[in-house]
Image 1 (cartoon, rainbow, N blue to C red):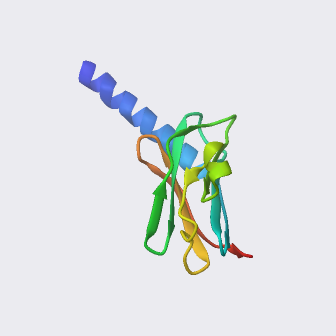
Image 2 (image 1 turned 60 degrees about the vertical axis):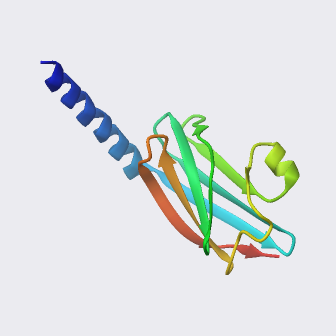
Length: 124
């Protein structure tokens, strides 16, 4: 009986995770200047919980810590600017963004990919 309940609970959680991933919207923005790199990975229409983001550009990868949803949204910032890092952005090197593009991926705290998107970065 306990195994059956555990299996049913697991299926229910998997169904909710899939449903939240199916409805999620991901926005990735990035900007590169000669002296800095910044990016944000923002998810909406998410199930309540914890999420983290992975930002990749060229061979560079940065992983944020978990962030809690506010309502159905999560906003995760990455930056090479010390002021932004002090405010909670995940640290990047100033030349993190390579080739004018980056890929942002949003994951549940359990490691399930919600969505991934590659975008061209604003070059200033």
